[in-house]
Length: 89
Image (cartoon, rainbow, N blue to C red; front, side, top):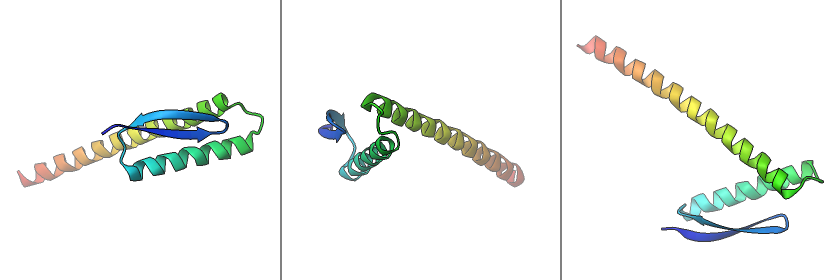
């Protein structure tokens, strides 16, 4: 079920729609606020758009790394299964 949430970063408020459960939502909101605060404190004169762009780039980089890792694990699992099937035939 989709629900509307509001998050405040800096001096801006954002209204978002999500179907995440409450535990996931709390985790995500906490991570967003923590990352925003860390970046804002490290580059105090950065505009909110710059901070959000860095956060987005970091999230996409993480996603690419996760996808690569998953692909490598699937390949290894497939090779393992192929070897096991070859030995039992």
